[in-house]
Length: 161
Image 1: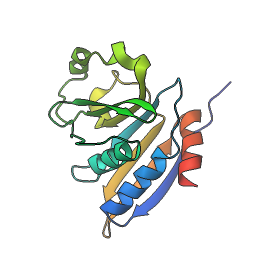
Image 2: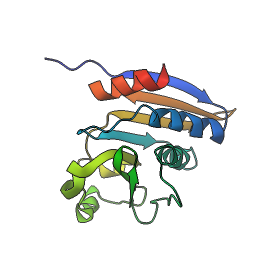
Image 3: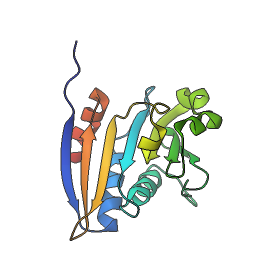
């Protein structure tokens, strides 16, 4: 059986509040499942990746400070759908650096992976279900969502329809 081709949807986001709203909408589609959802976040510095991740985590019930993993590389959160790993790999020079974080050891307990700068962890990360590309445009931001797996297409259809 061959996998269905990837699907993509584009949305204009007027401002940070619109980015937060679209992230919260994704949160409403997530459910506890034995399989994790893996979401890669792409975009230049300041494009809204951390804004998206914080809003998603907040909508999933995380209270208190939601720290950026820029310096720690990994932050763990208990959410309404289970454990979430938020990774920011901007400072990773070699994907092998991720081996020291024990990500494989805990993978079966993780319900949601949010990965900023995933290209810097190539070969050390689970395959993405969704890739959210964020870019600055003349008026606000543009979001392009690639839905790569069956799970990603199901989530994307519920989230972006």
